[in-house]
Length: 491
Ligand SMILES: Cc1cc2nc3c(=O)[nH]c(=O)nc-3n(C[C@H](O)[C@H](O)[C@H](O)COP(=O)(O)OP(=O)(O)OC[C@H]3O[C@@H](n4cnc5c(N)ncnc54)[C@H](O)[C@@H]3O)c2cc1C
Image 1 (cartoon, rainbow, N blue to C red):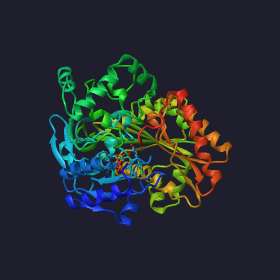
Image 2: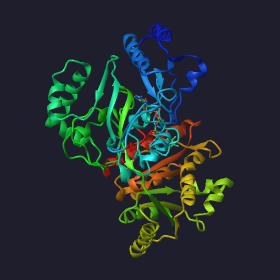
Image 3: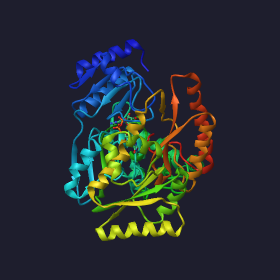
Image 4: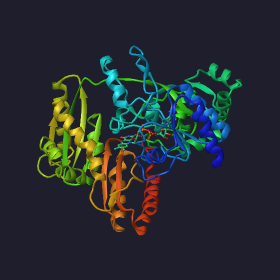
């Protein structure tokens, strides 16, 4: 990294040359020093580019002055990847457009700053949408979603973002530009003979991933569970032996590597994304339980009925919602009695009759398997379903607003295990936390074995902070045994 003089010379020169806005004031640097994680790091400055040329010129200049750069969109990341001692390049202000839609071939080309919900709204008239659906979709933008390899409640249906990234244009660390796309074998051979920085990178990655000894290491080091997004996606370059939820495109494509790299390999300037048909109709079955363990044990049984999502709303979430009149009213529409937790189980279908049949089959299956549910409340109308999802989505915000110094802290929350191990994994982590005097809260994607576990820690006390590595070590050891992944969507 450049020293202080290099950094201020860099920022000064950048300010003179760019048509974008360069911010170095204390307010902006503090504003961009946080994301949704537990980390806080002040950037050197912030660039709000007007054009892709601004971005390219900034990266080239940063290379000259040896100053790090970091792309950023909504800054809603939960693992600290949107903050750094770097020049932050914020794409959300001006580089947030759809560049091209091809409804016949079901793809769209977008700039990084476009927010996912806004993109999906514009795709609605075509009956299409972007598949993976992080819960933060009302602010998360495609640059961050792609760089984090995000996914969401429908991951059992659509897999990971890396499954849907087709091509991208990027700026490499020397300021040169490159287009990454799937290549045929003949195209790969040609690329490997090239001279540019992109050819150099292609050669290095090709050598690394085509060597059988390296392939064995990549297979060995890749968690068995398909829901994973930690580390670089080298697993996408080995021919077999690793699991994916969505069929893997076997062609050599460096866009798959930049996806999930959290801004460390290249700055993305536009992305071509696969689209999926928008479901015609959906229904929910809100399955009530009197314990979280029973609920999690039931998930594999529920999955046998072909749902499109199974999400947990836990005891904390339900209790906190009841304390807010707006959400308490919504709960009245789909909660019966006083369950410990519910599994929000969703089905897609073409008609109401088909959906009613699916919910009925779920109930029959649960009865047949002697699953001790306390109620199953269906939601067929769009309004009631929207209410259920609203409550599910506000859950985390409410958790964060728990009064007092003990807050649900995200540090092991993104782990995922094959779903058949979920109940056992969660019970063991909960027991470990209780043994050291710590309560835990939960939310998220039971269907995919990803239950976000947030221990309640008082970060104002050193002895409480000391629990973070303790709990992390325990969780990581357990995960290894289950073939789980420490990070499954947050990076
Ligand atoms: C309440 C809440 C719920 C969440 N739920 C989910 C969920 O269900 N699933 C999930 O996956 N995540 C979830 N997240 C985490 C986060 O919102 C997502 O990972 C989201 O995709 C990040 O998007 P962003 O626009 O905020 O990206 P940012 O945080 O701005 O950036 C993310 C990464 O992308 C890089 N980046 C951004 N733009 C570029 C670019 N142009 N070129 C290169 N690198 C770039 C950044 O450097 C950073 O490393 C949640 C977060 C919150 C706060």
